[in-house]
Amino acid sequence: MLHPCMDDYLYVYDLMNDYYYISPEAIKHFSLPAVEFHDVISNHAKFVYPQDVEMLQKDLQEILDGKKDFHNLQYRWMSKKGEAIWINCRGYVVRSEDGTPEYMLGCINEIGARQKADNVSGLLGMSSLRSFLEEHVSKKINEGYLMRLGLDDFKEINEKLGSDYGDMVLRKTAECIDSCILPGQTLYRAGSDEFLVLDVMGRSIQQAEEQYQEIRQAIDAFVKDNYYEAVYTVSAGILGGAEFTGFNFSDIMRYSEFSLNEAKRRGKNRAYVLEKQDYEKFIYKKSLIKLLRNSVNHGFEGFEVYLQPLFDAKSKTLYGAEALMRYHTQEYGMISPVEFIPLLEKTGLIIPAGKWMLHHALELCHDIQMKVPDFRISVNISYIQVLKSNIISDILQVIEQHQVDPSKVIIELTESGLLLADSRIAKLWNRLKEKGIQLALDDFGTGYSNFHYLNDLHPEIIKIDRSFTVKAVENEYEYKLLSLMSDMVHGMDVKVCVEGIENQKELEKMLKVSPNYCQGYYFGKPCNYQKFRSAFIDV
Image (tube, rainbow, N blue to C red):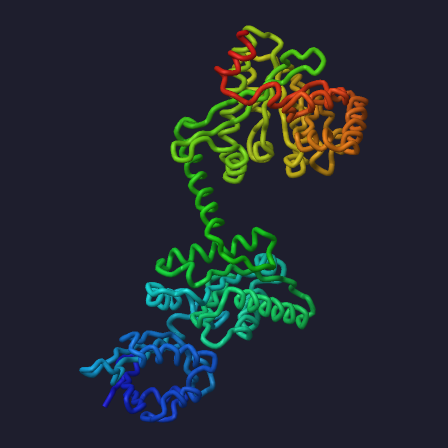
């Protein structure tokens, strides 16, 4: 006789005679036909959850075909009350001398009560998924998928309607997803507002995307039936089976989290299929952030100030220079500002790095002014510095420290930064103007509120972005637009600097719009202080 051991039900499966025997205790809880029964495969329909039958029979077939000797599967049995109860079935195959599978001996234990993620959704949690994946990912899985689903902006539902309502939404969302689960798939709760669908039945990525659309439709129907009290969407990150074969559980979770986050980053309410090159870029950015933080904490090692000349458009003489931050690493060499500046802003490292930049730019300006007293220095600041640091104090302090005439200092801010820091800009500029410091609006013409800022901030200079310059050279309409804009700006007593001039043709065309200053590779590329001084100061 087989007796229950703690929470386990022991069983014997006679594979040769298609006969099954289980601990008598199991018959009290589950819809088994009997303690002993034949026709095991056909009887599965009586006690195995319908959506799990195909997955179970596929695993058993691999045993019968001699492909494996150990059975370890999590799926659901139906209770006497008609409830789906999660179980973990393990068994070892005994073979005859010629290798034919004869028996499978093992135990079954209930994991529903032990491994549910929470009492909200009633789904299996991450420990259950971990157990399954750690058993299977060591094998080659070229098909199937893992889909991570997350509610978009779920926090707003909790804040507006309360946590009880939020729990109801999670339960209904779980039901919506479960209604779209296919045979052989398992739905897990990933914590918070996320769910995981695991398919090991060889379905394709295209089928995963189709399933996601069905889930979206089910959720849309729930939102409508609930009279739009809580309107929300769901995003998904999808990994193909081949993408996580051989990786450990933590790696797979990182891939799935990245994929879901990427779907949300791209606009939400959509599915994103993992692309290795995207993940590699993500890892590269994380590595670069680590290097940037380390550099900031070690005396700004790898940072350097480059200078690009600004020329007076009429006299063709040097007016000043724009100070530009550059960053070099041993691992990746010189990093483009397009890459590292946004990371500095994202992490807040732009605050100490920006302060370092101000200090060294003004230090170089002071050195140059010893020979060229009228030399100007233009320094970019980030909207993050405006929002989260005492930027006014920082600017005034370095000006005083390096004994630079404030009227020879130009502070630049991009128009996109103005959109984010609008309420604090006026206060900043008023304080700086009182000290005689000039204001320049960078990338002028690329945004939507150009003249709004001209009216409110009264900058001394606007800088026309190269993208506008190129269009004006090649397109007569764009040229007329630039010319009219220049006339209007000049009429407001604001000076114009044309950026991005790279050749004689562009210079001749741009001079016709009467700019005050010119900047670009034609006059000089950004370079370190020594090269700048040799080329433009000590000549």
